[in-house]
Length: 315
Ligand SMILES: [Zn+2]
Image (cartoon, rainbow, N blue to C red; front, side):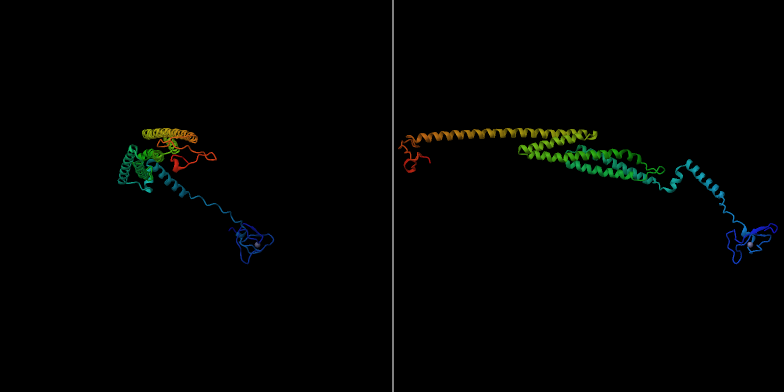
């Protein structure tokens, strides 16, 4: 502190320090020494506390970091996988070979199940082939779940990515085909067992629906199979048509026969009635051709009948 510079004190410290037992507000006092002659506060107590300056930036650290980061970026640009490989576990060659052979086998078997499905005629074989295909799709799909990093590629991944959507689409088409055929089998059985016109109509409508449903499956892969199946349904439909026509005809004939019999019966009844009337008014030959006494009309006009005497009378 300069002894020469004078300073003023009012007894209240300006430097945010609390002084014990000295100070206290007083008239402004000019001082020339190190402490106030009025209150004893030191000269520095009247100096306003300097504002807290922000710390100067750690230039050394910034420059150092910039150099390191820049270096890392530069290296990454030259060899982008260098760092990624530090953090990602890449598949080994052996693993890659395993994945490839797993894919090849599943893919081959998937196409075998597709063929099996295409060649199958019965529902059970179709369903078996469908289940097999589903299994192989899952196997191929499990390869797609492996982490295929840019710097750690799985060799077979592009093939999996290419093949999987097609196989999944095939599975959906197969499912649609099977669901129509399931119903179709039931309807064909129903038609074969049908005995009445109603049952036949029901089966025929079912077959028409089956044909409409199978035509809705627009799959080039199943096109031929769809054609064959439509033909089968159509054939069954024709058989049922014939069957219901025959049944119709049979029922018609039965009605005609029934009517004919009814008419015959009526004619016979009429004949008998007339004969009975004529019997009441004269001799008539009995079964043995012998003429008997005429029947004597009873008082109420109805023919009397004495079986013991006449034998051939009717009640
Ligand atoms: Zn003072």
